[in-house]
Amino acid sequence: MLPVKLTTIIASAIFRYMGLKFGKIGEKLKKTIGKFGKEKPREPEPVETVSAPKLSDEAYSLLKKLYEELGPRPAASLSSKNAARKISEVFESFTEDVSVTTGKIVPQINRWMLISAIVCSAVVFIFTLIGLPYISLIAGILFILSFCNELRMGENPLRSLFPSSEATNVHAVIEPDGVVEHTIVFSAHHDSASISKKAGDGIFKKLSLQTGCVGFIVLVFLSFVETAVELFTSRLLLPGFIGWIMALFVFLSFALSLFSMLGPLFTDGSYTAGAGDNLSGVSIVATLAEYFSMKRREGKGLSSTRLVFASFDGEECGAAGSRIWYQENANILVNPVNLNFDGIYKLEDLAFLSSDGNGFISLSSSLASKCSQIASEMGYKVQTGKLGFLGGATDAASAATFGIKATTLTSMVQSEDCPAHTAEDTPDKVSPEALSVAMSIAIKLAEDIDRKEEGNKEREGLLDGERKYRLSRY
Image 1 (cartoon, rainbow, N blue to C red):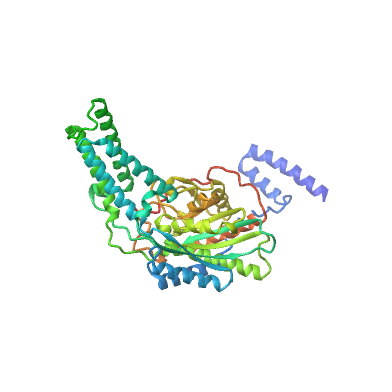
Image 2 (cartoon, rainbow, N blue to C red):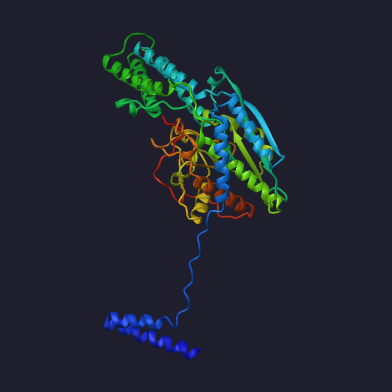
């Protein structure tokens, strides 16, 4: 055997030299001789494939069933309560540890805050115009602080003035075989959004809540400037009309604020049935619960990780229902992480969020990166992304508020083609492959955490893209 190998090595060297000297003839001879001495080339290691293709069929079937049975589901309504009951029945079909809880929320908080902003804009405009800008300044600053606190924490002094209703949450728990050392909360929401009014033509198509905020902030700034001028000229407490140039700027900023906020305020009051937003997330969570319950019955359950499967009410009004749930269920959360699912449509648009709460709340970039890496190992590119200012809030923001490592998987990319918050949010807009990838990542994440794998240091997103993610069409 040794002489054969030695002969092959010598022959290869000779014909390699011939290949350099005599071109293609020597190269062909070198390759022909080399075949006899080379070992069979190793096959490339296969990329880990999606492990939940059959589960996606079950999840998609459940999605269509719930879509047909439930219809539109405004937060804290009877239809949303009925949705929670239906989901609890799905949970009870494979586990006994199911709980339905309730809590008071303000279901129309977004509408009421818009009305408050319009009223405050009018107050700032009028008092600035008549030469009492210090009243405008005080009112504007107080409202900005209240508004920011609402966006960030879901709390503000105005809430006590608005009507409240009872939200209904539901969750199921699957215990590990041993002592609980970790908890994973797989979550979604079952309430649905109001149908957004279509954008107008011309300049009105460019208006949004962001432009409304800019107009309001400029209006308050102008009241500050006028206050400083009147203080310097000793006219602060004396009413009287301001100069026409200042009045023009005040009027323009008020008009920008007013017309930007009136658009989303006036809708026909109808709600979407929400296949993608968010029965897709509900079906993922319920199917995962069934999968892990089956594994436990087969003796293949997790060893030290408690799994909680939750569906929340009130996500469309500032994630109010999930905040109540996390506050009331802290006792079952041991070293918890939260993987939230919200608005699963196209596979190519999927992203794990590292910011939430209208851009005010940071989610776990390490968890988002870990989940993105899991997807990459399966051969899929799932980016990490962020929710910008007034981009909305998901239930992961509630988890992060309570100090829990959390991220949301979504595909609600900021685009006119996204069916979320429209009457076109139907089951055919949801990709079964996207459901499959979502569940595969969740299963692998649970297995990794149960094995106590390290490598979760904070770092930038592995596949950061330039797309913006937004849970509102305004």
